[in-house]
Length: 161
Image (cartoon, helix red, strand yellow):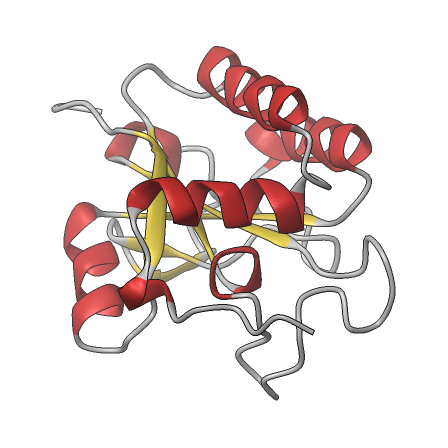
């Protein structure tokens, strides 16, 4: 089996190709449809990053490969960047109020009712779990640089979002 490179050694094109291969079964059009749905349904200016095992090719908890438990079992971790999108989370659903939310996923799907329908439709589209978390650019940077939790922007955030 070909070992995946560390994200730090990869070009932007290689990272994008990995995300499409792992999270979207190699289907470029499915990836583009996924991104278009996010662009259409989220508040204007919201940035979208992919994090987690769809990016790194391994689970954070135990280092197991993406989809180690079978096809469609690993999730796509989507981080939404911007203040407007954070307004969809309940007031008590923040780790850091106004800066970083708890994840919206199947086990806690009532914390951001305004975007749960979108998350559900994306899961059906890609045939695997999708989680959402909203954050600020600052927290995204801190997680990448200080905590070695890389991300890949699929939609750039716009000022004021």
